Image (cartoon, helix red, strand yellow):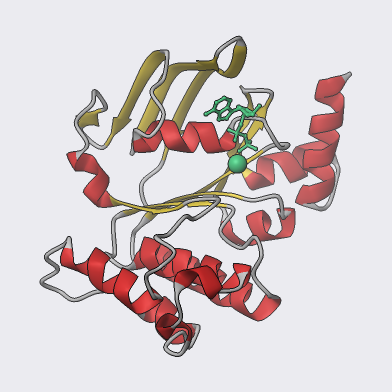
Length: 236
Ligand code: ADP
Ligand code: MG
């Protein structure tokens, strides 16, 4: 369980997260959605300890975040914009990252296999297409089979086949008991994957609950229509 209480974050004068309270259930998929700039990535970075909140408390399992980062070994992170040391080939990058971690049970390379990345891994990372970089980004997040996965717009830039393969992997890892947080602008994807949806609007939590609660309550049949309605109503 990840619990967030009374979280505030501002960048200069800009209040980016306002009084966020949130519990993220173990073994479930939680989708964070909201317009561009609503604070999704900042919220994720607070959980990762990459952004320091101005107020509030975050607990990841039994660890209260306070500047010690050992809990991060339990998290696989797929950043929205992955930056790699450009001169390395994918293979060198994987070797380097694997060297950092002693994995007795072996690495999870299912994504590398599913994407048939072997040839691409021989190229310098700077020469990879955006989609292939995103595949490498996914491969690295799942590599250590961490109990928590945080995926920031994981399918952005992927073709339909690659996107489906990643969604299959996400569901498989949920079935393996992993806790997964993802962000997405694709509501059909959220509907397909997520148990719980969190809607952020201008840094405030606007909704947090099961997806069916939104679709049933609004009279809209699709999640996209229902979320669009909520966002429009909020701006009135
Ligand atoms: P989202 O992921 O929902 O699109 P972000 O969390 O990336 O939104 O950004 C929320 C707001 O915070 C935006 O207005 C963005 O410009 C601002 N922001 C994010 N990171 C920084 C930063 N490091 N410094 C200043 N402003 C930032
Ligand atoms: Mg973002």
